[in-house]
Length: 205
Image (tube, rainbow, N blue to C red; front, side, top):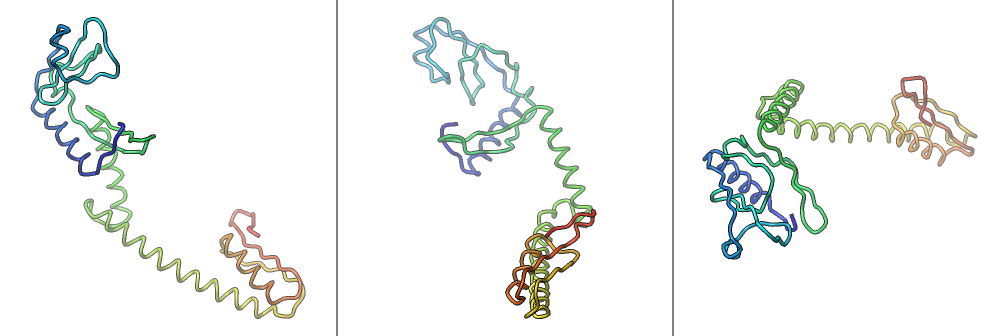
């Protein structure tokens, strides 16, 4: 689309599309004369010449189209908007309909069920549980960073005034390895190399 939509507008679009589906309205195909065509407000991607075929979804849409269509809106089954992306000066919508909606909902429900089991949370409370997990993860990362800082200071003090230093410490991440090497280099009088096992026989350094 060459414009933008708010989340609320997209919800309304999806709601109205599904309302039209539920009403199971008959689709009307017409071949208006040129005079009649000039009086109609219809969608078309280009200027048309010759006989024009219009497809009317009562109360929803009137478009020029030579393709195939359902006979009633109910045959569409359901409409679900999945994603919205910025695209050039407008947006691109990804949507599904028909049986694909049920397949999608079944997949999402199965994923959510698995998450709820792993987090020991009710199906409708997985987002809240993930939020708590993120908060806990942030807190623990802070504690780990503090412990690593203390370890780096202790190693730096330990090797103060010494020459080149070679250290092995298991369980360090790549940035923690660099932090320790930098800390020791500030105190020793030579070079410092720090190695930490990846658990597969290789090392970070």
